[in-house]
Length: 170
Image 1 (spheres, rainbow, N blue to C red):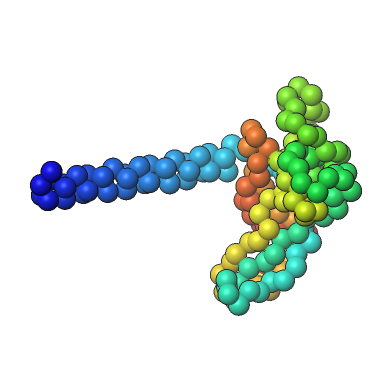
Image 2: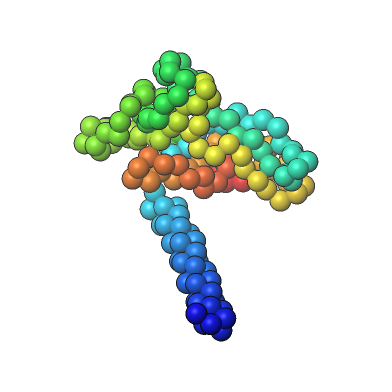
């Protein structure tokens, strides 16, 4: 193979890989946008912690009130499963129990959902653990009392907004 052919082959390979990467990234964006638009709404009560990180800029560490009963219900240190929650009239999740497998929607009441959860070394990983915001907006977001999430068909959570005590978006 001549050096000119090798250069053409390398350029074609880079073009194909770049196009594939762009397709994958855009597919992920489209999927998440549909998730935000069509996912079921559930609100989790927050217990916000440290509002500032020098290395990452302004952010709020998110801790959820529901993690305590999850920790109590799961004696194992490492497991994957689902948290069964009941949504009150304000769509705030209340812990019902822990499920080791995904249940069919017919096994759930109308106001119940399953939320995907992982327990690793006693730490509950339910959704994102941080919310990043524009520098200088810490006081504004310190009023956050709830996280509003969208739940997809697999029980995965995607943070949509932070809400104040009156369930208004911040």
